[in-house]
Image (tube, rainbow, N blue to C red; front, top):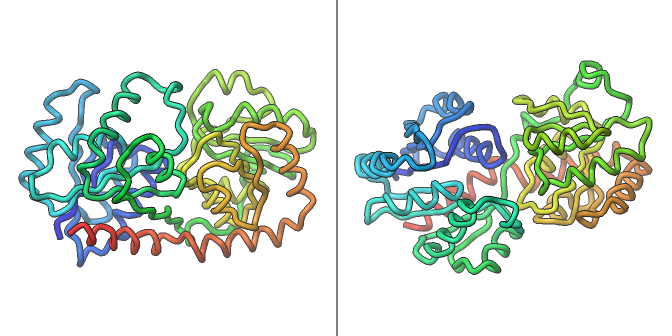
Length: 347
């Protein structure tokens, strides 16, 4: 089966990492895989090492009209049986340029987005996807929250299914780490691993950090510089390619998001035996199960209470519970197997 896996870029991000895991682990005897990106990115080498055909269309900007024709010509040459695309722009362009017989699958990952926080172009792309969603052969979401959100927003979701993200349980596991020593951190470290964005709840995280004198609060990710400047009680350490080293250097992970689908950072931290305090958005409650604390979103009081509660508990027991839950429910093998099944089903 000729399968195109298409994505906007191959820079570091949650969707991009899941895309890479699918590329690496999909059954190459069952699928002849072609990977296509608009812009390329730092994860290109991961694609090349996987042994699949890779095309970076090198879109020169938002208004690069030639990109449309390059993509259309390439798809005519490949003549795929199925295209599975990730992210808004690539979803639309894959639908518009695909050969007539080719089946199309869209990947959705967002839930409870406040579109007012994003630009007019993002809002327009969202509207276009809604308009064309009834023509798509299948939609795969990575969470129940994402499926229900798009349904509520008027998307045609009758052919939508949920395939949960997969976590590399070998890479993300408990290991010795000198992270605290390297960054001169205190004995107890509480971290957030998320892009620095209003939607991730950094304002709440920063306010709570003021209440603790003997604990370091750290943030891993890049983004809004104003949030960094305003947040004096949190150490912003930037992005890490080997993010597992961070998880193995913290004691508790906080996800204070105001909107979420399936949070990779929660599942990855749990796989590294890090207990989590998470806001009750998206599928975060489902991921954590009985192994952490679930709080109301956008509440300073509740986040502090959640941290205090987890600090009183047996962290070793929670750590084992966390790891076991991810291994059982959210492995890469399970994600890939379920994705392969859904791809085959459209034919």
